[in-house]
Amino acid sequence: MASELDDGNIIFNSCKEYNDMIKIVIYNEPFRVKSGIGRKRSDNPKITRSSLLRTKQTLTDLCIQNNFDLFCTFTFDPKRFNSKSITFCRMYMRNWLRNSKDRHSPHLEYLIVPELHKSGAVHFHALFRGYEGKLKDSKHCSNGRRIYNLANWHFGFSTAVEIDNQEAVSRYIRKYITKDMILLPGQKRYWCSQGLSRPIKRQNISIDWLRSVKCDFFKSQDAEYYTIHKTDLPQNFNFDLPTSLEALRSLPLSGNVLL
Image (cartoon, one colour):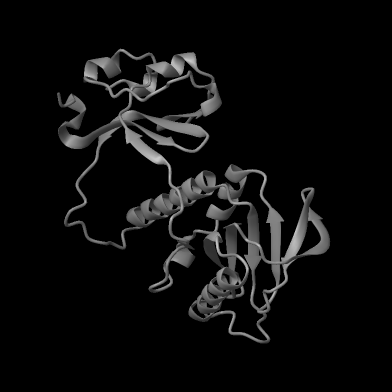
């Protein structure tokens, strides 16, 4: 039997299931999702901001879900290369990735975000998994982590540090998605290897079980946010969809009440 919630695509809550955790957002005021058919691009600042937020959320999802093990930065020597041309820099970055996979890292997976420096120079921040190229010890540390250089990056300076906190890295790398970077004509905001895992997304799930599990909680002006580690879930746990608005209204969490 179809749920009453299907009518009009009204969204009360959203859920993302990652490898080892579940994140739930309960909206204070339910909203209706409009169809994207026939929607046109716009220069409206609000839409630009919304697009920025979607991109940053996608980066967060990819970071958390894929267990990258290296955080790297790549720069170009302005004395030898046109470091202010994103087209040029992207071409060299892509060629280097292709050569790395062919020569020593066939299972390399990556997520790469370009950054535009105040000087106008382009450099790249990258998350790697499966990189098997040579790393050289720089003899320096950052926050207790050893900094390495990538031996076969010959276009400028490079650094690499081992990742021990996926969420912290996701917060760090997403800050480079800015309006200035996005508005470079015809350029992608980021790029990644094919086949990266993404979280399972659900909407309007039953959330009464939140009362009986350990979770991290945060509340903003617009929503309630819950993070649950899968080790804290009961055995044979599954997501039960609600069957009516009344079922949602009966739940104790204030953000889930239809006002």
